[in-house]
Image 1 (tube, rainbow over the protein chains, first blue to last red):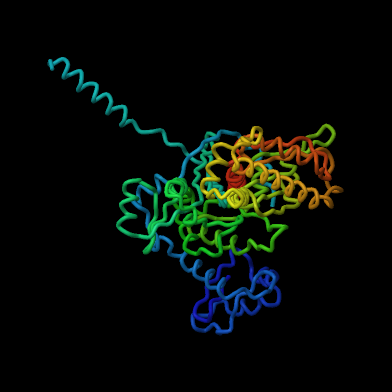
Image 2: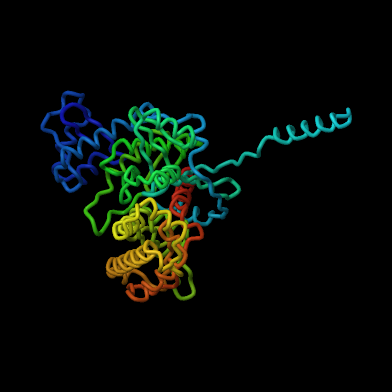
Amino acid sequence: MIIHDGKKIEVNIGGISKSQLEKILGEHGKIILEGLGKKIGEIPKQTVVYNSDGKIESKEETEIRANSMEKIADVMSTVEGKKDSNFNKKIGNIKKTKRDVSKEIDMLKDLE
Amino acid sequence: MSKEEKNKELFEKEEKVAVEDKPKKEEKFKAGVGVDVGTSTVVVTRQTESGTFVNKFHRDMLFQLEASDESEDLLKRGDYLCVKTKEKYFIVGEDALKLANAIGKSEDIVRPMQQGILNPNLSTSSELLFFILKALCGKPLVEKENLRFSLPANPIDKNLDNRFHQMVLNNFFNKLGFDAKPINEGVAMAIDCNPIIKEEDEEVPLSGVALSFGGGMINCALIYKGLELDSFSITSSGDGIDVSTSQVTGIPVSNVIKIKEKKLDLNNVDTSDRSQQALSIYFDEMIERVVKAVGKKFRDKKSEMEGKIEIVVGGGSSMNNGFIARLEDGFKKFPIPFEILRIRHSPTPFFSVAQGSCIRAMADFAKLKK
């Protein structure tokens, strides 16, 4: 989750509930969570990002993280392949191996 | 040319065309995809309905060039695979290493991942990693297809938190239309290799220790009947060996990588070659560090485990000939609290994490159908 410097909020809680997130972040997490759902411009400027230990991260790191999250959303608009159609075909090498893994799947599908 | 000859030529041409036009038999894939987002390589794995794992892999490396007419010429002539941003060209994958070696500018190599997680200092290259991942993964086969991506455990020797890395990747794969979940890298390795614990006459499957020697980290997991009992990681793996070797020999990192991958035989080190000597020393140092850490970490687990335990090993940094023999020696010198049944190298060490992730994703899908 990211709180930017009062201008924008990007939130990704990746399937983790608010209460779980509060637990992970500790007391400081509540400050961040209060910001969730608010519109751009409504976030207090003093808001900072805390890491999982409840420590304040450096501003520089905060900005990098915020930037990368914003860019991920429209990654295709910022970079382009040499020849788009060929890029997907050319990228990566392929190695094939054959094996029956049905026993492993049977065991694993019953696990939580 | 006689009429008969002309007819023959025409017939042969037609026959050739007819053969080429035959549709290729398309392999159908099962639902469930595994992704190993490694420091040195990205691997995406699916399994066909006939049981073949198809591993698509790509070296996780970029070589940057300022966008200019000269750069464009170079790229056109070399037919390098690249992506372009506004200011730079990024040659991706194996081509990046080839070009770095050819030009001799290792410093222009960019690694989107560092020590097992997204490189926090390089937001642009993270975008490029996602671009590459998207091309490798393709589209989901079914709506919200299950996807498992490898996640390193938090390291015991460095204050590093993988939560941000996990969330960003989760978000990214979900945006592509998958139902993504992380899987511990060591556990994925164990699932693929299926180690056993031998208890008297019984062999307990999916139980034992897995060690994944990646580019950035070494991941270790202890599992019992498929359940993770403990896991941890240790920093400085293959990349650390490369950098240390480069520092003591003065040979650029890109050349060290080439020597390590193409020449180094740990059973038969060429002592006249300084880089091989240094590589051999740093491999030993890494093995000693890992074996000691495994012993220390699992000491308190001794009471929970009975029987002889199999250790399975994989990862790109375990692939040099003689590596397993050195690891066996390491476990003899620094015993761990378990009785070792044997140390087994994955038959596909480079792909085990992705294959294990794929098996887990297929099991997720099977569970949904149940």
